[in-house]
Image 1 (cartoon, rainbow, N blue to C red):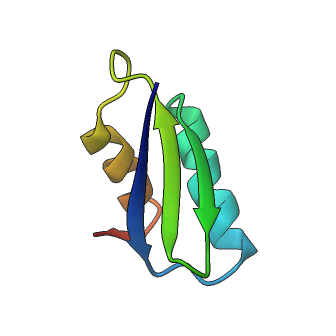
Image 2 (cartoon, rainbow, N blue to C red):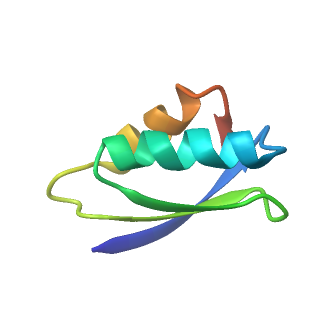
Length: 66
């Protein structure tokens, strides 16, 4: 398993947390949102999911991944 912390802009509330964590779960990725730090810590299997797929899943929810 690989662990990566991504900077994510545009998150402001619990709904943001739920939508991002839910989208990650759908693609088989464990994600934990930190609103104060504007970051998402993800844990994933590189054999199954790429970092680009993870970024795309977050961006599809309307957030910017830096």
